Length: 316
Image (cartoon, rainbow, N blue to C red):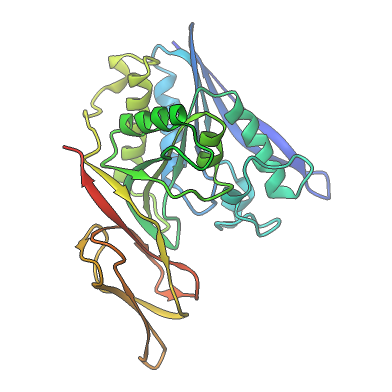
C-alpha cells in the first residue's frame, strides 16, 4: 500500500511571525515511477477540486501505487479563509503570477513555493471551477504548440487532458502567469481543468474530479484497475476553442441562454440592465458554438467575465 504523509509547507510569515503555509499530502509507492502533482484551491472561492483531492488522498491510502503523488488541495489558504478569488494579503490573483518570485509580495512568494513542486513533477493536473462568480461545464484544458509551448509539451499535455475523461477538451487561451501555461512553457505535461462553480461543491462535480484524477493515474500506470473501483470509462467528446467575452457595462446581468446551450454567431446571449430597466449592453455570441462558461452573479461590473462561447469540434 502507498505510504501517505500529510504536512504543511511554510512559504512566508505574517508581521506577527505567524506562519503562512499550504497543506501537502504525499503518497509514496513501493515501486519507482513518475511524480504526479495535483493542485486545487489556487482561488479561495473554488471548492470542487480541493474536496475531490482530499477524496483522492483517501483512495491512495488503500491501493498499490507506483511512483509518487503529491496533492496540494488548498494552495491559497489565505484566500480560502477569506472566501475570495484573489489573495487577501495583497489583492493579487495567484493565477497570474507564476512561476512566482521568492523575494516578491505574498502571492508571488506563494507562487514560487508552489512552483518548486511543479518543477519536480512529471505531470500536473491543476483543478479550477467557476468559483462564486461563474460556472463551467466539465472541461480538461491543454495548450497547443506555440507562444513558448513546445510541440512535445503540447502533445503530452493534450494526452493527459484526454486521460481525465472529462466531457470536453479545451484548447486553453494563453494567459500569462497561469500555472498550467507556465508549466507547459517549461516543458511539463499539464492539464488545467474546470468543473462547476456558483460558489458550491455539488457532490456530482466533486465525484467528476475524483474520477478524472484516478483515470489519469491509471492511464499512466501509477495505479492498477483495483483503484478505479466503480469509476466509469470515459473520454472527451468535443474539442472546444474560445475565450471569455467581458461585460461592456456595469449593472444587472440577465442571461438569455443557459450554460451548455448551442448558439449561433450574433445571437443575443445576455444583456446588462440598469436598475431602471434600461438595456445598457447586449452580449452576442462571437462564434457558432456552445456556452462553456457563464456568469453566475447577477451583479456585473464593466470588464468582468460575462460569457465564454467556444467553437466545438466533434471528436467521436
